[in-house]
Length: 397
Image (cartoon, rainbow, N blue to C red; front, top):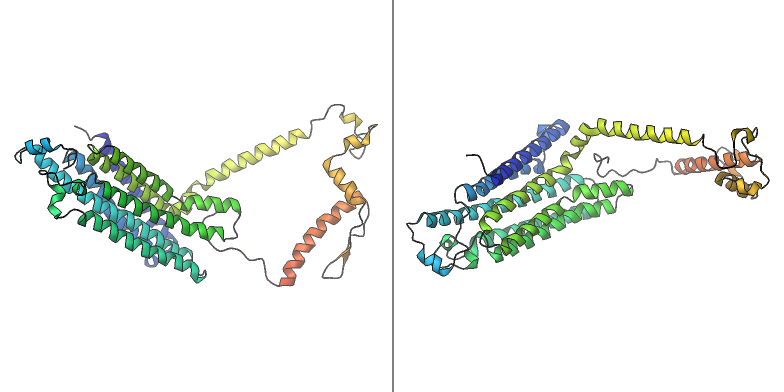
């Protein structure tokens, strides 16, 4: 008998996540060498170990416990369920698996969050101290929220063995698969830390000198936690609405959420590698689009408006007409307006005075020269080339 669809989905996610993590390490080793790997490069592999454990736990919920746990039973059903009944043992072991799943889920997500903060430290290297302070605050929030979540998982239900008690009913706080209080605490801490992790690169990009299009692209790249937030909220809502099947639902959606977290946490680092692989395809598509545009512009030059024909065009390309004003192009209008204004002579640093020529075409040339010389003069007067923003050097979107 083959694997159920949920198991195939879980192991497929795990395989893809491990491949992406391996590609990240390959890129980093190839780029800086094995000896110069940083904390975030090791943390992603710590997360990968817990990802395997979390996927195994989620698979065991269905394969071993058949989706059973100590929740979703009426008082009468609990009293009638004998300890000798196989379902009783399935519910006990299912509840224990849920505890393991919660622990591995929490360690996995918070390890990935820590790897992102370590990556941000490398990202802001050489920038003012206040950028580091944002990251240090993030570490504090991460540690505090992790302690709070682990404490809720293991200390909410007292005594501890009530987490898998069947009869009498231990109460909602002792339902590892569907405890509403645990779900709300986990969701609140998870979402709040993810929002803070998104805010750090967004604030860096907001103050950068990059083009707006590149800034927006990088914001999208570094905002993968939005998808994690969506998965966490959706998972929590489903589990609260369906407490009877909460055990199986918890396993399936925890795997989906951690898969998204693994991909989005590695994506900012592995993105340059993907970009280098797909660059030939992007360049080929770009060249094709440029060629089509050039062909379109060349064809448009042979199109004449109503009332015009090649034989009516004069020696200078001007069409004689009884109403000259209606045939003025945008360029001609600009030239005539500028031609009536005496432009001030521009003296360069070499003492050469520009703008002495007259005529419509001369005015056009004078305007271009003024722009060029002005920018060069500013650079030469400052004595330094224009400053470039060195943030995000490897993310040429």
